[in-house]
Image (tube, rainbow, N blue to C red; front, side):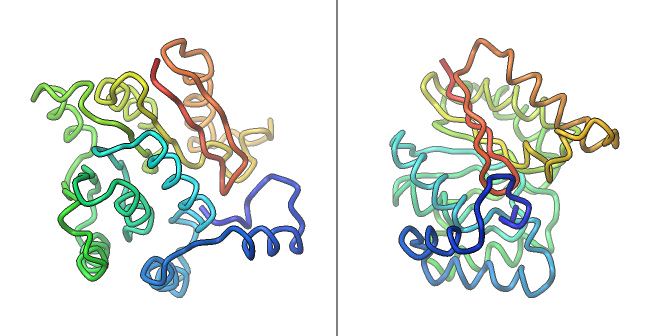
Length: 222
């Protein structure tokens, strides 16, 4: 999600300064992002600052195999694919063949297509097949950014598939600050709240919730 909804108290001058000294967005990622922004859909992708952070975290755990639930135009996938290196592979789950066709074209242009295994269809079924195929504990990380009503289900399957010491990242967990507004009772907000409660009491993981973008929850599998 874009930083316009970011709940942290960053004024425009400080945000610009942080981006000036800390941004390392490659040109091909910027090009992908700008196409999405021009279409008015920037809220459907992570910010450059968040993408760069996730890539750093993936590199820190020396990940070689990952999962992405919710691809859209492939911006976050590009960040993650850069981070895992030439021997890495990402299982990318989405249901939309049209928008992921643009993603796949950008992956190919960046020379990263061979690192990404795009699976179209129901993401939960894809993850269930991975579990059934004996892939439990075979992945180093997962990134969840899809339909909020199924976040807990995605999380549980990813927790099974990620190895001990592996990382699960979940986007939108502050949900435009609505999670903190008791008057917001819509289904999406309630689904995010339910996910947050679920992870908060989960003793199988160590967690941190970051006020970056629209909220990023990190969970390290114990």
